[in-house]
Image 1 (tube, protein in one colour):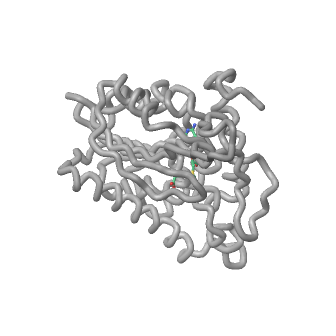
Image 2 (spheres, protein in one colour; image 1 turned 90 degrees about the horizontal axis):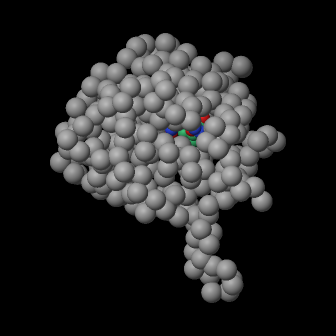
Image 3 (tube, helix red, strand yellow; image 1 turned 90 degrees about the vertical axis):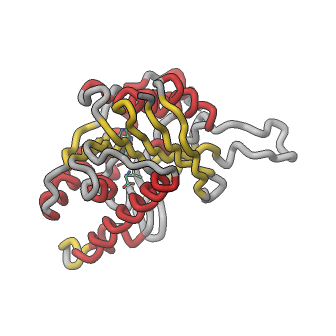
Length: 270
Ligand SMILES: C[S@@+](CC[C@H](N)C(=O)[O-])C[C@H]1O[C@@H](n2cnc3c(N)ncnc32)[C@H](O)[C@@H]1O
């Protein structure tokens, strides 16, 4: 088994770029939401993208952002709607919904094929308060410290090895303005982290990650595997607290297949 901790952050980023760029070329929408209705051949009509399928895909981003704002409202938070970052933006599903609320949104992703589609669709939809950039091991190479009022990330950190996802959470704390908020969703336990009295070595944490073939229905599954990882709540809190940030709320999300995920609402001091 490969020791995830023996690789440096750049190696992990290179692996993620290879995997997600492959799927970004092959199945950009299905790679974001693995339902067979988002396979290209189900979204196109005689080779042309169906407006209806595209609208449906992006409308699900609006539902996710509504849920995010319900969490903020529940906590009595009025966010400054100036500058937001959508980390792991894919084809802009959540970026476009955020762009209806914030003056300006930066979408950041490791896969250039996803980013190209996000840029094209932004043009097609007439959304001009978004900008898409390529991710890297150190986001502060391209983004200024203390420049965001809000950082959002959903369905992304779950694919990133813990050593790197923890580094990203630390970077988010540096990118937030004083008084800014981040809302990040990630799995906090995996099926491997469960009490099993039959097994001699349980419970076992899922630090090595689980391979997951990106597959459902009639998808062509040949290609690099997308991995799933969890980061324990304690580790997320460690990364948050190192960066002058505090946990405001922890929202449980029902997982599937034994994965449990949480949404962390975090505020930067000041
Ligand atoms: C399941 S998709 C979710 C996309 C988007 N958050 C959404 O919900 O519509 C996961 C995305 O994370 C991106 N990703 C993976 N590793 C990344 C990294 N190191 N930096 C930025 N994005 C990354 C992938 O390229 C992919 O677009």
